[in-house]
Length: 305
Image (cartoon, rainbow, N blue to C red):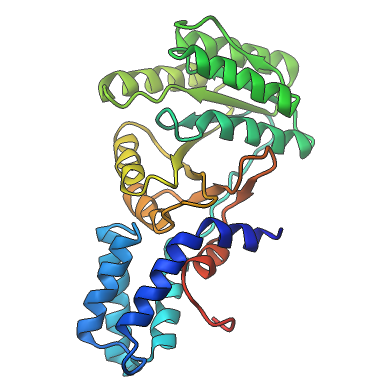
């Protein structure tokens, strides 16, 4: 299955909703007008694009219609697609020579630990020396799960006992990484949002230790969100953006029941690009996010657009 087909499969539910809704509001004349643009905005909101992104997208379409006088459905969808691509500009995790530390953040249940394992497998296959560290010490299940993914990926996992200090895990993982010449250290951190103050302090402490023990390391914070949860994912993104510097976003579980518009909503909420998409349950089902393929999978576009 091609990457495009994987994206289409993951966004099928949202695409069908958008296509049937657009066809309905433009059915009479095959064109849009001021009234149907309001309907278009509601379609985008219902597709979980979020109020801010939906309002922005509709305003861009309205501006173009006033400027060009072209109200045709195909033209409107083309303008919409172009602005979506611009908002979702492809992001990448750029690894540097030496140690790279990737902090995996996100609430429990989003696919954070699973994504950590898939990412470790990806980098190992690229010839990198990789280590996983279980810094989510508050859930014994998270430690055990990460060990399972480490075995699948064929990479070592550094872990302490449940309840240990995540900062201590981070310290030991950094020392081990330096001693073994590790290229990529992936830290699976805790995701407790019920107390933002504790979460903020914990992440700050982890970052301080990285800054002290590996001052030249390339540090990248990756927020993992469950694409099936729609506006809950947006709220999580907003909450984590308050307590952490987010460099990139992973949309996990983009494989069937995803609420596709959430990609636009979370980039709008965090100013961080979506860099990876989880498009299945297998260890290889983690793909670079592609804005063009995503938009083509989301909107009913003619091939030439």
